[in-house]
Image 1: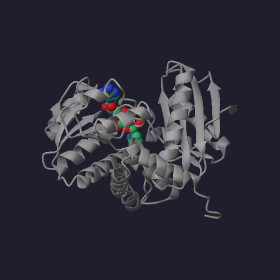
Image 2: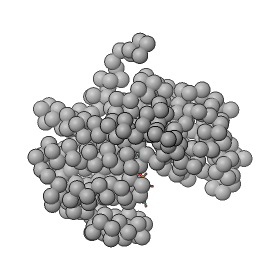
Image 3: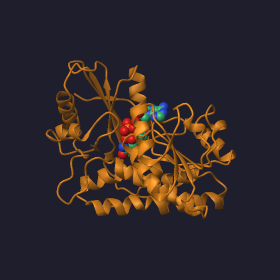
Length: 349
Ligand code: NAI
């Protein structure tokens, strides 16, 4: 059932074609160096097979960094469910098939929900395998929608940036791009802290709702990256920081939830040259995976919260190291992850 695709960069990449469901599944295991590969399942309508596969490869590599940096004893993986013929099969049929794939992998990879998949989908998967997280929380246990934890982690990262600059929240202007599960909740935390919000979403209704609820200024999606603010919080799409957008940024700090915000590492260097402090996305947005891993290990919500709040001091340390070494924070974070991944394995740990 599992067709293995050769890879120079990943431990294993699998493809399962199911024309009967109108779906091709890709499972990319980037690294199991620190434990079983852990990362969500994204369902999306890609134009080509190459796009679907490269998303799985890129995202699973990102999970290795995110999980290592969050000090989780898991590796990095991701699955992509390429919806080739939407509506051909029910979600029940698609996620039953996905459950069988996870079972066949025997626990080398553990999945959870991501863009395009939900808690309800994961419940279907659970009927076929136990190698799954993102399920409704059992009594006293962590679990369910990870987005509130992702939002809290991003907020803690912003707090660290302000603490580092010796600034309070009073009068701090924040632009939030994307007001979905994470961005919407982040706005609530920011409004409560006293920030002035500028918000945008391609869904005008969603933007209007958040703007009314938190007294935010609403701008067109084409204007949000250039907003005159202190902090820009990308919470919609990846790849938004590139040579076309960077020259127009007015924010001094970029701290958000979206995965892979830098189009290329060169863009991170350019931000630093422009005096923009970019907190690496995978450091700030680890709250959701912390929740999923704790759920899988049987932890409770207090344990999740304690681990998510460590994102603040972790960002603070990266900023201090960046200053001391005169190196952009994203490069410091990369060095730290490389050191974690190269450290000798703890036998029997
Ligand atoms: P979501 O799908 O609930 O929300 C995304 C929002 O962005 C939607 O409201 C959408 O209309 C809006 N959007 C799309 N394109 C836009 C544009 N060009 N301008 C303005 N708004 C736009 O997704 P969610 O869960 O809130 O995640 C947001 C980002 O954070 C994604 O990139 C996701 O991969 C990442 N992330 C999410 C985690 C989670 O726990 N949900 C964990 C780690 C990363």
